[in-house]
Image 1 (spheres, one colour):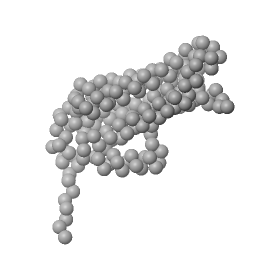
Image 2: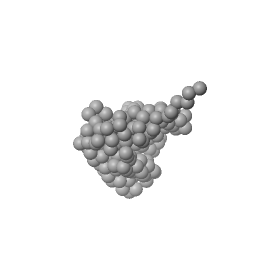
Image 3: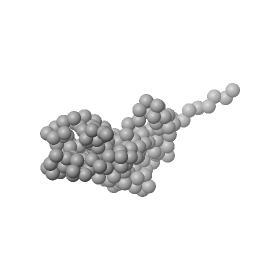
Image 4: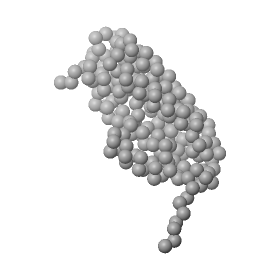
Length: 192
């Protein structure tokens, strides 16, 4: 039987809404695919964001289903500890679902307003991870590393969506077909 601490640790990882960062073989495949699509509007780092988001959503669903028993109040020594667990776990899961929904809509409509909504969602996830970190520091100290990683990751994606040239051209200016040639000049073919 798996110890309750191990189940709690895995559940906190999943429920913190962490996105999947591929391991070495998966990372190499992700790099090849994303780099190969860099001339497309959804390519490069933007493609990697979606790869990571949807992979994280899938892994979260699998881990949540496998650890569903850890969300039962009887598994905690007090009702207060269970409530604190839910307060630290639920916002991350809910915001991950919202982020995936908004990001999916963004793929369809590609408007600046939808991008701003995605930025607000990423900001909300970062704040929720900060609150989770505070709760974990007091009640679940063994799980703090996951919240720290999530804060770093969400902060980096938030910075990307504010500073990226690709994001500005695809979602604001909507001129990627023209801008791509100045960002990634086409390779000249040598006549033989």
